[in-house]
Image 1: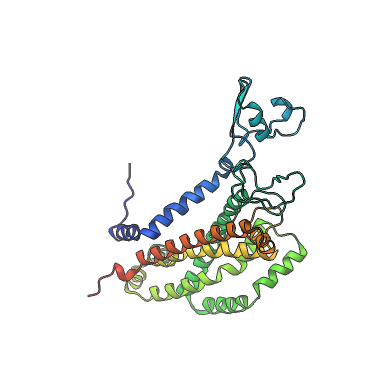
Image 2: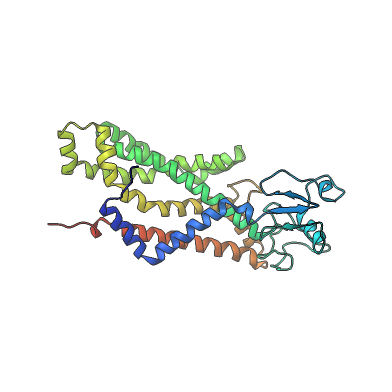
Length: 349
């Protein structure tokens, strides 16, 4: 069975990345947060993880909706598992295992003769309080993070595919192809991005994929310029000239020689592109041009918090969450940039 081995230079870069502690530990924590967000329903959800009732076992989180009549209530809609848990406490009929935060991001929890937002309460299990209509802030933070991170990752992959492809082609082939795309990019980069979003939002309600498409229209330009510059420089090096003299095709030269030697540029910008994607979505949601309500969003929470400064738990929660995530991404980016710096791994003679 073949075993894939990294070359010594790559191993040195990975070793150097691990030696930069703040970047390495930030990478581990950030990766864990992304993985946990993929299973957010197991941690933050109004549905129970496990219900044991009169000898029957149910798993509502990823299963079917269980009507109340099936679990001893008189209503036919889905069971309120928090109420069921209180009913079964101390009885022999069964038990209910709820997630640590037993609320979903769309659920309102109102109180008699009181108006939201409600402050943090461990008794009600609203650990970060509620927003202006009674939804759990912690739940909306968690699901908002998942929305933002997947938005950023999808935007990153697609924009890099476009930017790297066009930029490498511009730098390698040059001539009329390069000149044509330079003019296109110059014209495209002068179009006001926010105005485009405002026009689209006035015509239709933007959704997750619509926003990705709009930002993608402008998001490929930066990576294209970087790749054009790097490819243009690499094309003039001796190893590329030698490959072309030996009869290598353009495809082989680009994919087997130039791109592997520009991978450090691509990898270095990935963390910062993720941060830019999170900031872009949060900013659009804050301004009201982003995801439609009631989608969980950091920008929507930030807007609520800025309009209700007396409810300090709303704005402080989202600001702390954004600060922690963006600082970790910055540490990761700095560590990758230092680890992949060619001057650290090159000997000049």
